[in-house]
Length: 389
Image (cartoon, rainbow, N blue to C red; front, side):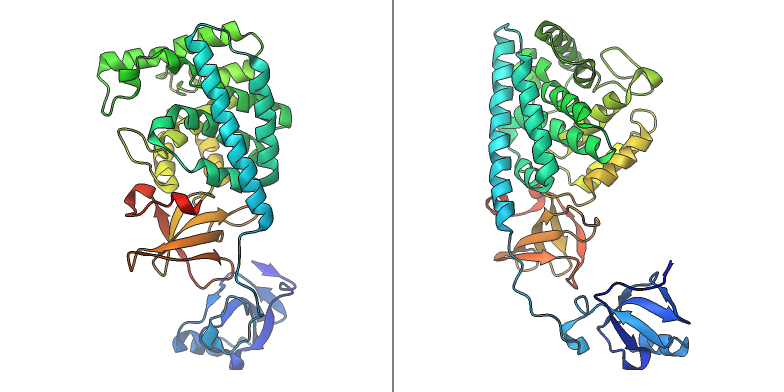
């Protein structure tokens, strides 16, 4: 890849002046700037290779160069959580509480045989959209805190949130996002009529138990019909999230073009959230591990193109997930908005290397010499990350 001019914050350096530790962002050759081979100079051999190549100048990123490179970096205060982010985090926490209360009310009324009121669900869907548009990272971090005994509530909220985020990513309008959110909130409402022993069984279901579990979609159809007011899209999200493209899903065995795009999206969001949640019978998976399973279900069960878009939307290291850095520290992905997947801001709080808590530090991966080594499942840690969210 070539460009006529590099970024303004880079320093033009003669190759003869290069030192180990400098981060070469671009190479200038006969007046053209090539940025295909960016990276830090780590060895004398790498220096010698550049000199022998006949290249006269390179462009160096001072902020990403190491301390021993001889370059003076700008004095900067330690990165701290933004005050605005604290406010958004509180708003997201309030929204999550409101969502749980709403779903609890819906389930309670359904259990008592009352019709669901559509207006409060749609009002909440509108609030969720505004939150996603303002600061999706805050809600992702808040909703990452999962508890085993509140799975049904949290799963319903998270599926709604994932559908809104996914829909925004692929360019759907606000009206469509609101209908997706309402369907996500309602998508497991039929489980209120499933036997609790089966719903919360800490192990594999027998065939008979699984057939009973599948009835939650039949129950949901009755509940949605009695509610009177949910759009067709919201109903599809609720009633088609267990269908599969090859026709082997339930309750109606729909296949191919019988499954509209929004229903295909709901299948993906439902499976992803179930995989990344802690349940009474399993620990949560990392997002990367969940993505592998989603991809393994294409193209027969899930829409392959949409799964790839979903992966791009959520990101390998989404806000709220845990990662290990190359120095052995573990942290929460704190900010990912407007950043590439490998360079979020990470809130570090624990050292795997030394098996102890560390001072909380905000690491901007764009400016750090460290790398993200891997995603970490909460269950693999010896400590509880909850207080640091």
